[in-house]
Image (cartoon, rainbow over all chains, first blue to last red; front, side, top):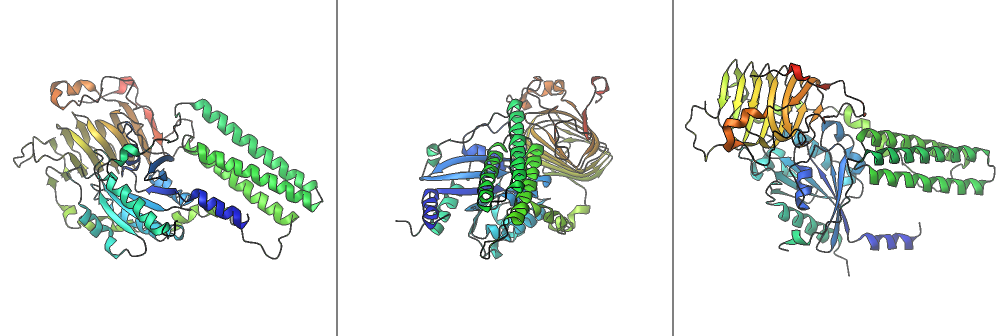
Length: 185
Length: 322
């Protein structure tokens, strides 16, 4: 591939962002994606493989990959690490029992070389449940404050009501834009 | 940036999941393409002209790229088993292509190292890594030993028959009632849930009967249970590491099992909600057997299309619950 082809390809791709949604099973990843798209969220089956959805936001095309979080599927996550602009890590905020599992899986992701340049949005989902931990409590449990290798933020949200989703996506897109497209003319 | 949701254009890829014909068609397509590449590869062995070989490899690589793209596009609706199978065949093929290429076209001095196969070969590494799940209980180490029966949680109770929330000691007004509930480490208990919930988590239950008289308008997550009977209705049911249990369920999506054995499914006895009309969420059509997906179970340990040995449908004459 010549340099010109490379440049051409870059030009074509520059307005396209690739996002990866990951998290433990039952976190609500697919529900978040469907809610974004204003689709029915009452009949979603646990994800057996993955879903791809394309949205446009502020002139950017977002290619969103939602990968199943089942234990059996987690070893496949790495097949999707290439060329991501951001990772959306989804947490079931009411799942106190597995919060250590969640921390370990997130830690593995953060150590992935292929994801080194990606922004991390942590969605503390299911804030509509009374038994949910707050974003502060989750930050503490996941030890997020010490995270300095990536651009990151944590946002509370509820995929069921839609609350907080907009803010999250807005942060992700703005963060990627400010990181990657400063030299845009 | 307000109301941006409205601006979001839905050009998502809609795939018809119900169409099994598509699956057969595409799986056949994969087999055909892979075979074609294999025979192309065989032809290469007979050629002596390096330029022709070079060209042949270019064609092979284009075809391989085509197969990979097709897999990427179709993997959202192909059964995981097929995706896995095809991915494995492609990996094998990629490997033999590279081996033959090395043989027939010895590497020039200045080449970039290709590692096309790394993506899947590294898969196994995750399993080898030692897991430190022992830390799981770090959050509340002392509380684990206490018996708890409150609005949020039912834990560490033996041989009791409880109604939630009516048997709660504390005076609980409707406002401070939780919309989610966690039950853990219960032995020989019968728990009847008499209020609507949005989420239910069950962990470490033995010889228990868990019955909900109202649909759970969200997900149910079950882990580490044995010899239990569950009578539940919900949007989603996930069952993990559970043995010898019967599920009388109504569910709007396909139930999943992972690490399970001896699980039997039957339909939810909708008549038990009759006297509780106010709890009967109208979005749940419990009597409607058509919308109940209790038979369409996905087993993460059995990704073939044949029946999993880990679960079965309970015969009608064996239905038994009080």
